[in-house]
Structure formats: structure tokens, C-alpha cells
Length: 119
Image 1 (cartoon, rainbow, N blue to C red):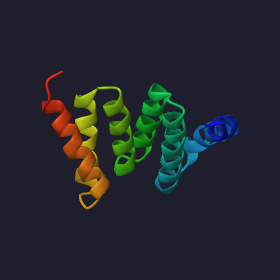
Image 2: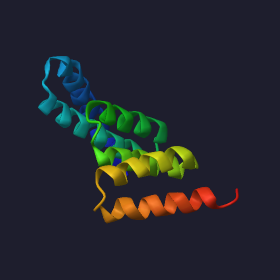
Image 3: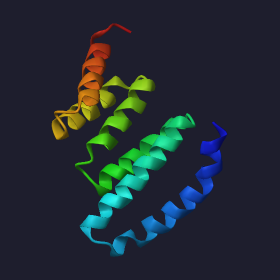
């Protein structure tokens, strides 16, 4: 989708400046930065740039270690790449952080099932 590509450059530039200033920010602002990385990861995922998406989700997790959705999103990308061990670990963490999220539960079950199937 071209709309993602059009918004990609300004968004990345903005994220760069936000990240650059992050060393001066308190813990509450780190959650906002984590959200920015998570959103950029979604853009990369939709552009089928899976490695960059994983990098962004990993950065989001570094800023906010309890961000269940970032673990889930990284798990989805790893699942799509066939890296079921990594996907399983992240799905498990997402479920542990947000056990009432039905989408996370389904993802966890599907990943567990994929790990048991022969290649």
C-alpha cells in the first residue's frame, strides 16, 4: 500500500528525533517512545520489511518491557518467517503480560501447534 510508503520517511525522521532526546526523558515518556517503535514496526510489517519490523518491536520492548502488544507483534513476524521458537517465546510473554487478551491466546495456541507439526 503506497500510503504506508508515503508516511514512512517523515515518521522515521520524527522517531529519530524523539529517540535522540530519549536519554533525557523519564520512565513515563519511555512508554510513548515504545509506542512509536511499535507503530513503526507495524508500518514495516505491512511493507513486508520483516527484519526492520522485528528491530522496531525489539526497541519498543527495550523501552517498555511490559508492552504485551510489542511481544505479540514480534511473535507474529517471527511466525510468518517460520521462526516458531522465537514466536513461541514472545507469544508466551504476551499472554503472561495480558492473559485476558483473546487474540494473544489464539496466537499462542497456533504457535504451539505449529511447533508440534513436522517440517
